Every structure is written in C-alpha cells, then in structure tokens.
Image (tube, rainbow, N blue to C red; front, side):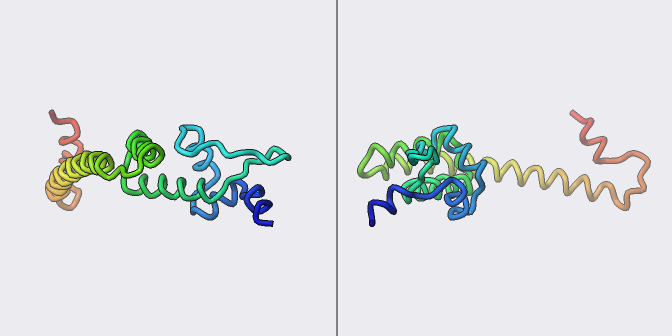
Length: 138
C-alpha cells in the first residue's frame, strides 16, 4: 500500500497548491532546471513527490529573499553535491547581502531625491514642474 502512494505522487496542480505557488511557476522552475523533471505515471501524468515539494519550497523562499536564479542554482548544487555546504552557502549569502545593502543605499538615495522634488512641487501650481525638470536634468 505504501509503494502505491509513492508511485501515485501528486500532480502539478497539487504541488502548486501545497506550496502556495501556481502552475506556471512550477512549469517555469522545471523549464529553467531548478526543479527536476518528475517521473510520469503510466497514464503520462507528471508525478511529483515530497522531494519536489521540499525543493520548490526552497526555491520559492530563496526568491522571497531576493536570490537570483543563478544564486539559487549554486545553493541547490551545494545541496545536491555536498554533505556540509555551509561554507560555500555562506559565501553565496554574503555576496547576496552585499548586493542587498547596495540596493538599499540606492533606494535611500532615490528616496531623498524624490522627497526633495515633492517638497519643491509645493501645492502643484508651479508653472514649471520640478519633477519634470529633474527628469530632464543631467
């Protein structure tokens, strides 16, 4: 009975539902190689198991944290090929953290510029719009 449950597995819609994603997301991650292609049932349906579910959850969480597809591939390679990938994973995460900090600095700079422009706009009755002039500026 247990073997039959393993063989049956779950279809793509069930995998998507269980992970809170959608069918296109599952298809996409299969297409780009982040999810291995599942075996097929005798009827030709894809049959996902808990390994696929766990891996998809990993990918989805990594995307939430802003990791690129290449970074996720590197992390998954560590999972697949190493017993203790912590040092290599740390390197990927540290690089990603630096990139996030750079983006935050850029966003703070953008916030300051836009805040200044909004203040310059006042009540919006100026003949020349500071925002438009800023966008035309060098």
